[in-house]
Length: 260
Image 1 (cartoon, rainbow, N blue to C red):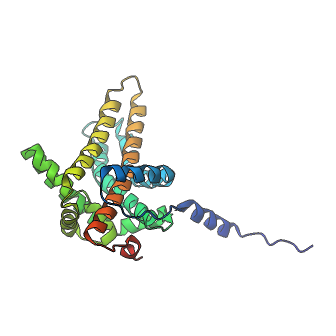
Image 2 (spheres, helix red, strand yellow):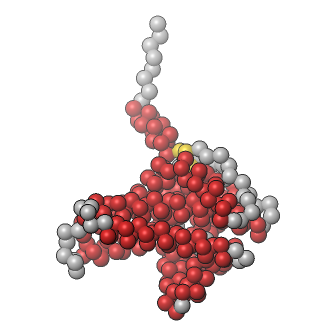
């Protein structure tokens, strides 16, 4: 009998890594924008892609999680607390951007490749961080002046990260693009932004006051909640971007827009 040629270990490992990094999701068509339609599609997508999306956002947050763990036993004014704060400010927008890149591929009917999504965002990390920083500063100023301008700012610029990822916009261009796309639906988008903020605040307050849990457990669960909410927010935000762009640009096709 002819002997079988064994597969080279390196080739087998590469094939396994590729298989693990790819997730197929059926193409999701744009629909008229509404909160109900968004969640009706977002939750099933989030459920099917929970593991890869959570792994992707977790991977981006890992440096912050490690620094946060190191700061637990460090002096309050020590360098680990500074490092942890800086990394948390960087990780959140980068994690959302990476998840948006992955979800955009899935919504367009392409295989969701978490490794490629991460690398794609890292190449534009400086744009993502600057856009998120400008957005946060302007929204904070609005909230300090009065709650209403703050929520208007949040709803106007809610899709800035999506514009950076999908359209390769710069920091200021992405804010302008988000304002264009959200025009006419800022009340509904303000509700979405408020719900997103409320979920994050609830998780933080609940875990902070859950004194029956060990401090390390509370810290770990808080990090996990941050990772999961970032992934869910990316799914909802990407679908909202697709719906609003299709409304403003009849004939819009996400696959063509991605063009990579």
